[in-house]
Length: 327
Length: 108
Image (cartoon, rainbow over all chains, first blue to last red):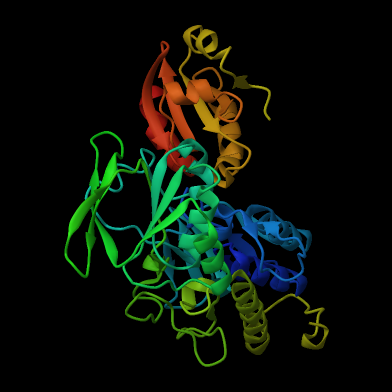
């Protein structure tokens, strides 16, 4: 068993790494259990690791690549002494203090916990979808777009993520069909304008994908128009799904209060969960804004909340060198 | 990159794979793929730890698309394990070290 730490941060997207920067600068020596490599957004660095250009993160006039931005966050926290463990938390016990966190059989203890495990993209949930990942079904447009040069492909969804993927994929594909279950898009106006202007993008409105076709690799999808109930086939070799997100909270079930949809509940205008000393920030507790900048902001809140909590406990052995005023 | 990780290309692939007396795990990757970068250090560790039992090689799909096409790679990272020149196992998507070693267990 290792020594009891002041704070363990679980997750390493913009929220977790901002919390790491702040708690590290407050001499709380955070341990960031950052997750393990994956081709889904549930991985170190979070959802931005699968994106290309981020145009709306303040401070970057010409935009910045998602993975590069996250590498900077990570390096900045490391500079102030944050430690990283590239593993996924397998179990937690928040029922007594110090809190316990396990990575398989290895146990870690801390006086406070910041949960920032984020959210991952939903899949369609159709038969054989998982088997066809890597054979036409993709969880990462930036990884796989390259292989669809000259192909006809489909993107499912109507939000910013769907349009971003579709626009990115027009660099490679001959045609990108956006299949959306409604008659209008949820996406921001600027993304809508770009998509409508792009000659390679077509829309199938009020339509859902009902079946994946092809034996060893994707050869098409069956779609149904929700108004007319008419079914047809769309001959595509690639399918990219961007229909929403689900929070990464399975490991916290029975430990932290969550909404019916699995998002963690935070109290008032704070990052406090129902367990005193456990804080939550970023997309794991926010299905409304879901931006890198809002996640980063809430990560800062969680760090301040955790620091004040530790001060109120009087248990922290570390001298707090920063005062809130300096923040 | 660790010295014991070979770089394969369209022209060297066949010779290197067929000529190897150890199983070779080929990492199909590219510069623009975030998850590929994330598993690079994991593969370096495995290459070092399994030295003598398993060789690890990298193939950049941007530079060597012919080989990627031959094995119908449509997603990266894809890891294909070759033994006696033949593909034996295909792993798609980035994975952590524990999970990778588990998948490779039968060949070590």
